Image (cartoon, rainbow, N blue to C red; front, side):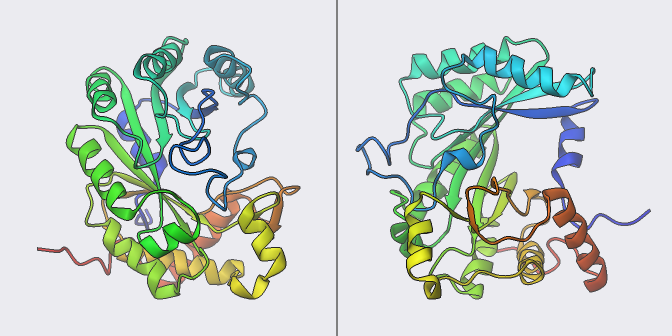
Length: 309
């Protein structure tokens, strides 16, 4: 039996559930403090929520209706599947507490939904909400995923993120200490970051009490500020080919703490929205190529991680 090259998300879910589980994305009708003026306007320069919302993920539908459509889609092929409600669009902890709780509880009341995953920003986890999620995690599966994107404040300012890295450290620490599965999203390839900068993210994030991480290659999307910047000044961006990115992702994994679950190495945007890069592979095809390269290099996640005293 071949040894595991990295700590994958499928194996992680098997530790928590008997049988298959599938995430279903939900648009809870929330906005973002970086759009409504409380932190900023216009949002992050890379952001277009259309890039990851499936057709059924529409705010005009109720949480229940979105879940039922998603379940109908998957259950035709997998009738015994169970589901995780993934509050993915915008900032899914950004509203008054009663409205947030109502959305989460509605999702958990849908048949065969066995947990929730909440995507949010590091500056949007007030303590009363965290107290509720702490109690919720005692009766069901709960994960909170924070959009960290970079550990460098200069980059966060450049992409109009609206928070600093210290906010991520605070939110991740408080959430993990509350007994909640805690994740981070990180973009590799943001403008202005060198290869060493990107690899330093692995070292810094490994010092935090993270349980999971999602890596995303930088994607330039039509209709975004960053997409417009790229089309006007492509020389300011370093867009790697797929093999170069694979080696970067492996180098990152080697430096990452070995117990952190790597949920994904890439994301995939609709072709009609994507400006660059055009690799022409699906996520599972990318993972197969990455694993083949890890075997060629005879390497594993965490082999270069050094525990800080």
